[in-house]
Amino acid sequence: MTATRSVGIVTAQRARFTEPLLLRSGGVLPAYELVYETYGTLNASGSNAVLVCHALSGSHHVAGVYADQPKSTGWWDNLVGPGKPLDTNKFFVVGVNNLGGCFGSTGPMSHNPATDRPWGADFPFVTVEDWVDSHARLADQLGIQSWAAVLGGSLGGMQALAWTLRYPERVRHGMVIAAAPTLSTENIAFNEVARQAILTDPEFHGGNYYAHGVVPARGLRLARMLGHITYLSDDAMAEKFGRKLRHGEHKYHFDVEYEIESYLRYQGDKFAGFFDANTYLLTTKALDYFDPALDFEGDLCASLARAKAKFFLASFSTDWRFAPARSREIVYALLHNKREVSYVEIDSSAGHDSFLLDNPHYHAAMRAYFQNIEV
Image 1 (cartoon, helix red, strand yellow):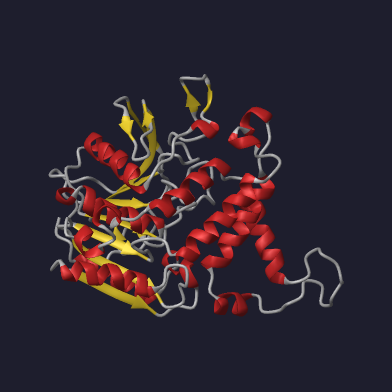
Image 2: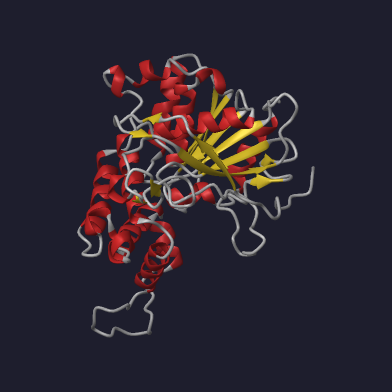
């Protein structure tokens, strides 16, 4: 087996598109840019390309590090690289920052040519399907007629599923990790509470806070704290923090007393320091809107009949935000349509975040599946 190592130093690239993109919301982007990274080498036939779709707070930076930021390891670096489950000795891997993002692709922070100001609140609503359409144009520009696989976890898994439905001839394998065919009512509720934290922040200014030189950090902080609770399992939080007191005794105040409080505040502050509030709002709405069965009177089996790919799905035992039962809904609908499906349910104590971690059983299943993909 090839020794496992990092892809090393990587550089982000930028693609510009001048053909207007008609959005599902009815809005139009007259022109836009996508920031992306690639790892490995595209073969002569273009048959070894794999698209990695990111989750809510992810980006195009999937693997490797930046030369001027040695600690800037890609968010799925444990999965992607030479000798890793997604082996860049075999595959050409592409990561893209979604439209509406805040890591370089056109989004609310970008220049709006119609107003000569940042888009801000004027940036149109984008959906999972819009992201897929924009990625298809990037594939065209890269000379990729079809993907060996489209892979993603959480919201990225929804994108992978959407790819197999929107461009069934262009995806040979759809890999849907820790995802669901739609958000549950509870998940929509969590997203709404998070959005309200941002929308009611005095520094939000109706989404045009850039002009005021401020950031709705308080709202972003609360949104991230709430979200982070849902990404972890009760067992994971109990094991890591329990009821440990920060100062060894009760202080009888509203500042940090428990270690879990300190952890959540740290995560909230860190997130508010690099993520854009408008992007958060747009992305959570894209999550809410995703429903491949919407145009099929709620019939998931009918909606998935369009897919022609082979599938790999994985779920995690303690993921209560995207529970294994939701993955099984997709599995059953695909089997109903006589699609080839591999499904693994991983025992993990880490909750939804399990899909990002180096679980040996999970990675072994991923490795085995990728090894059987012909290029």
